[in-house]
Image (cartoon, rainbow, N blue to C red; front, side):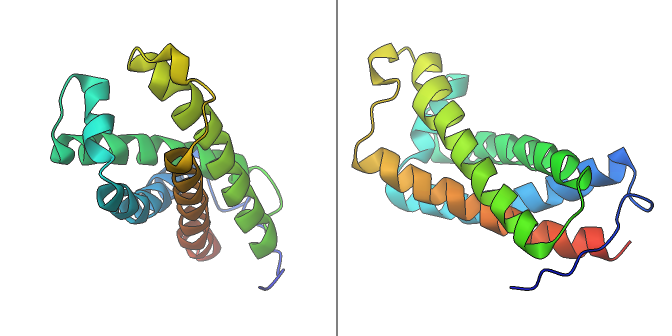
Length: 148
């Protein structure tokens, strides 16, 4: 992994950072969404909007992925960006959203407060998915930010 630093601050406006983050987040969301589909988790995501369809769950998941990607783009775009740093922030981003989303917000929003911070096999798989999401998001964001 290279540690070449490039100065994107002069070229990237906040709107470009958001747009690149959304694109990268959607890419990460696609990969993570496939993992969630294999685990049968998409209907539970759909329950956040009162549905049980895997398709609706995937759409909700992708909307969340786009938002988290935008946050990633803005945060990473404010700092001197190296490849290593981008991937580290991607992993940390995935872990933070695993704690916030999978361990806290989702159980609370689904009325399962007894499941907050409960970690079993499904939650460990979810952590892996969130880390993969973060890595894919960083992998896609880097060339977008570099080319401008």
